[in-house]
Each structure stands twice: as structure tokens, then as C-alpha cells.
Length: 373
Length: 123
Image (cartoon, helix red, strand yellow):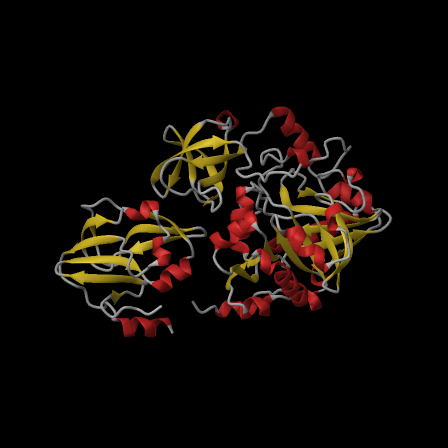
């Protein structure tokens, strides 16, 4: 269990804190990251019932600003930023000309002509190079990889609001889902957005790296009485899977389109053009050859990434993500299957290491939090 | 957690409790700690013959799947059915939670570690 490779891994501003706190560390997307603190199940349950605090500073930030920033983002990002107001973020995709994912992203509108794209850690360099190259042809816009300027801390769960609010003068209760504001959190200047990757209410807090540790500790202290605990990437993965949020590299990649992935709602179909538009429109007209569905494993076994989906003994699709979910206590998976097998209630099987486990297609997401009235 | 001296251990982080011609097999505290929360144990049917050093089943945590290796050769005479309902026993009481019982064939192999040797392996 010695990891000599750790010397070549990137570290977040909270790395020393994770190490000192006894978190189990793993290499993820080139970063030395905490996979679990107290255990994936305990952390997962904390987020569903109380709240958890995550270091997600490995995520990348790419800013696009300038006279032609809107046109540039409209070209690069499949969602429609003309419908994105200042102070809001939305989910989108960076697509190839073939309509497949370079990455899935959040787009923040920081100003009329200033955007911040949040990209996956392992895709930051690729996405930056792609954006720089594509932006050249569009017009005048500066593209900056600002990842090193931010530490990013997520507070997720029903107790998130009560945890963060006492540490800031910003009125967080008035912040809408996918809205963001500026303020101070534990005396650190911050961008606070009501976003996350867990299916719960919560905030993602962007702060300067040099004060990340103070903010991290303040958040945990503020939430301690409510049972708020630090969480790792393991729980982040089981939480996002229960909420059916797609993971780049598993559920979507450079061979899948938003339509196949069930993410057509995040495409700005009314835009005259954008990268991949022609292919997506053609696919929408012709119909997809495969579609992402939810599976609940009703037999014995846990479906995992790469397992084959079987119908009458024949491989018809592939599991992209799967686990035993701690909250629902079911083995669930997302998988690509032919559209003819995508209707909820369809019986299939999953080849779990040579054994066929019965499964049924279910509606996504597996878990949806109760909304407050 | 101390490693009981009445058990033998393998480099694959399994423990063996030998009594007469049968042996109970489980995974060590170190192994469960590395795996994280165990959610599923996949085992062969009783009657299956296993060979020392080869995989005979899988143990799954929330995050990963690991193979179980037979520490000795023989016939599986029982599997711990309780694990189907309570796989977390492997985490809670690793050294008391046996996974399979094997009737030895060809005796106890060389190379099993005693608790002191196993603890030395972990440091």
C-alpha cells in the first residue's frame, strides 16, 4: 500500500488537512484525493440526512471573457447562454463537431461578457486546449485556465443552508437552485453557488487557495452539532449515481451524444448553430441507436461499469455506472440499451462476472429529494 | 485491532482457523479496512473444490470488487449464509466472521503466517 506514485500527483490546497485528518487517499484523475473519511456508507447517509463537506478543488475552471465571449460560449457550449442570466449557472456540454462530449460542464455567467466553465479534473487540460483552439475562429475573447485561483468546497445535504449561513453575510436562503452570489465565508472572499453533485440541496463555495483550510475547518465546526462530516470522492460517486447524475468517462464520453445520454434538455435546440448541432439535429430526426436507462438489479449481484446487459442471453448493451446504493439499499446501475428495451418495466439481465443477474429498467433518477413547499 | 494468535494468515489478507481437518476462512481487519463497507459476498456452492492460491469468490464493497483467494486446498463444506443478509459483519467483526468452511485435502500448506509474521507484513 505504499504509493510512490503520489509524488507525481497533483494536490489541492486541502491536501495536508486530508492527510492530517486520516482520510483514505486515492489517485483520481491525476490528483491525490480523499476517497473516504469515516466510510462511504456513513458519509453517503450524512449527506442524505444531514450534510457533508467535500473538497472538490480538483475541478477545473476556465474563464472566457471579452467582446465576443457570448458568441464564443454559444459556439462551444451546447446549452443556450442567451437564456442564462447573470448570477446563474447551468449545466451544459462541450461537444465535438460530431456532437459527442469533450466534457460536461457548468457554465457560470459572471458578467454580460464573462463566463466561467467548470470542467472535470481529468479533462481540464483537454478542455482548455479545445476551447482555445475553437475560440480563435469565433472572435475576440480571452480564454484563461483559472483553476489554480480557486479552492472549491461543496457543502451538501438538508443541513447545508444552516451550516453555511452563519458564516456569511450573503443571504443564502434567497439563492435559487443554480444561482450564485459573492460574499465572504469565514472571512474569505467567495463565490457561493447553490449547486452540487449529490442530488441534495447544497452549496459549492469557491475561495482563494490560501484560505481554503480556514474555510474548511469553519464549515465543519459550524456543522458539527448537526452531525455534518467531511466526505470523500467515494460518497460523492454513490450520491451522484443515486441521483442519476452522469459521470464523464463512464456514463458519457467522446463517443456519446447528449441525446443518447438522456441530456437533450440541456441542448439549446433553438440556437442557429453550435459545435455538434448538425449531428445532433440529424440524430434527433433519425432517432438514437442506444439510450441511457436506469436499472435496478432484482437478482443477486451488483452491476458495475463495463458489465454487459443481456436480453434473452444476448448482449444488447453496457453498464456505465453501478453500485449498491447506501440510502436506497438497492443495487442500481445506468446502462446503454437499444431504445426498444428502454421502457420502464422492461426485464433484462446483467452479466455480473459470468453470472446473469435479473434486472428491470426503472425511471431515472433513482433518488429524488423531497422539495420544500 | 489485534490479530488473534490462534489464527493463521495469508499475504492476501485472509485468516484461517484450523480445527481438525476443516478450516474456517475469513478476511483480516486490514483487508476489511482497505475494502471499506462490504455490501456483497459472492461464494461458490458447498461441494465446490478449491485450490490453494486460486480465486474462489468475490467480496464487494461500495467502491470495489476484490477476489477471495483460497488459503488452502479442499472442498467447501459450508458458506456463511448470514452474509447474504448482513455483509457488514465482515467490517464489524472481521476475525469472527467466517466466510467459508473448507475440508482440507493434502493438509495445511506451507507459507501460512502466524499473527506476529502477519503484523510484521503490515508494517
